[in-house]
Length: 326
Ligand SMILES: NC(=O)c1ccc[n+]([C@@H]2O[C@H](COP(=O)([O-])OP(=O)(O)OC[C@H]3O[C@@H](n4cnc5c(N)ncnc54)[C@H](O)[C@@H]3O)[C@@H](O)[C@H]2O)c1
Image 1 (cartoon, helix red, strand yellow):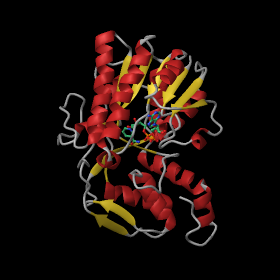
Image 2 (cartoon, protein in one colour):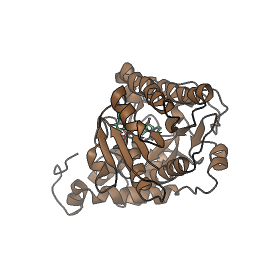
Image 3 (cartoon, protein in one colour):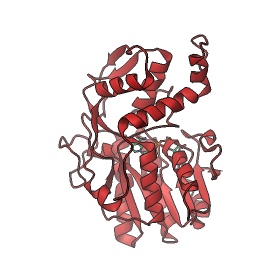
């Protein structure tokens, strides 16, 4: 089976390519990525071909998808703050780009697994979030991901395309970058703690998130591809572990070791949801064999990965502050 991963040089995409390369039954793996937030280095040592280009390039997309038996569509302009800075760019890649990927798949009836986001629940206060709840996006990013999954499911309904739209919650783990303005919370906190810098929290830190280790996510994605899993509605990809940002800091501090970090609070960010926790019944029905990696194990693995990066390894070896390259 030949698999195309759009966004395959990104954080989740490159972890997926590595997972797929270990699976019997998977032949050629192609990562289609414009390297806007991903990096060729993420695929170092992975048996996957990187095709550098955009999902908005129809000819390239057709060419790449024509040889595929399955497509995992992860390419997107991620993050809420990025979408606040440029809503149209998020729409262009996340909504229009998804339609282009779907049309390329439709030509050959190719199975498509796509990434949606828990952010689509937005202002809906009910916990846990189950898939039958209404959606109320609070940011252009969330609206664009709702468009992503709506187009995916509509292509399933309209054209009989075999599709699966998975709502990722807060995914974390190795390869997730720190050190830029839009960094996700786990890498941003680990980076600060390893540098001995203050940890910055938006809001009071009592907001909650359902963190999912990337190893668990890519296991589900690979199983979905190999077993051609489809579903007529969206499916949460998280396991209902709700942790506040304050608790996350404590758990990370334990994983990192050393003195507790200083915490600085900034104003809450527009577009951020207050609480997030997945209902996992539909997911467990479709993937009964998947056991999630517990949060503390996943955090410890992620800290270990960070410590192995040259900039942090040098710091642990006692190099002067400022030697980092992030
Ligand atoms: N990480 C999370 O917690 C999370 C949560 C919810 C949803 N998601 C979704 O999961 C997917 C992967 O996210 P990630 O965290 O790995 O982010 P990422 O930024 O590391 O991955 C996205 C990849 O898409 C590529 N890309 C962007 N525009 C492209 C284009 N026009 N053509 C081709 N490639 C393009 C980027 O270069 C990058 O490699 C995204 O669809 C994102 O919306 C992630």
